[in-house]
Image (cartoon, rainbow, N blue to C red):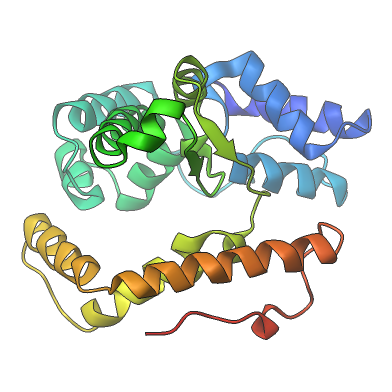
Length: 252
């Protein structure tokens, strides 16, 4: 497993040499490939060093040093996920014998959650090829994602490059510019709120039903709202407006 302390030292070094956080993260990706710290953690450590932190190690804790995220556990988690990608964090924690928090940390801080995204992109391209043949022929379609670390993994960037996929640029940490964050996910959660489900399959079935129940006009309105948000962002000089509530919000 990659030594994240070493990467934190790199972040501190880049900060001292006035290298931006975005460029620092790109340098980490080139150097460490799929073992790179998550973008969220890279930005967090950059901010902490900028505010005066000196230590690159985690804060010392009382008691024994945790071994729940050592190389052995990482390998076990990776093998389980690759063999059955429907396993929940609870399933993984029970199988390996560590806490759910430790499992979550392993998934976030290693390449595991990035690896499982690759087949998803293959299915997306196949779906576009079948349903939107005219877009497929001239390669005029664009892919937008929220710039999360799992979406910017090297394996996916290589896939996009090999298939000449056009990516819509998304500023880091900009949920108000991501349709899934400002519209779709909240809309899907409303009919599911307050319900308990007995299995992953039941959650998937109910989520799919809720998704299919959304009228086509609502999706159209969402993308119109999305365009208005772009213009607000541009008019603000690539800085977030102080109050996004002035931007129209798509409602059911």
